[in-house]
Image 1 (cartoon, rainbow, N blue to C red):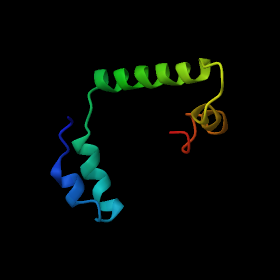
Image 2: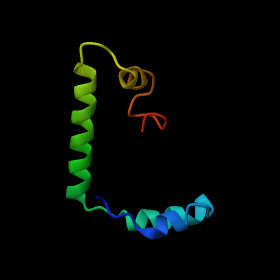
Image 3: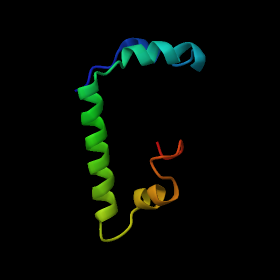
Image 4: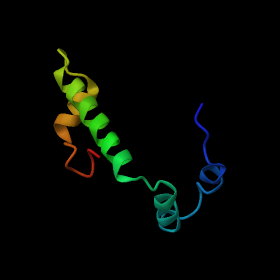
Length: 72
């Protein structure tokens, strides 16, 4: 099971602006980790798009590409 930092639950009602910098630092990923995430995400999108029958996710991806804020 994944261990969740207890601060995430405790802080969920704090103003978003206050938390962004703190959460960004907590999720500080090195270049290799970011590259693995991008690679996996691209593979998932390719798999969804290659499916025979379009799913809800395929419809979403067709409407909102990953290059848009909504798609991300």
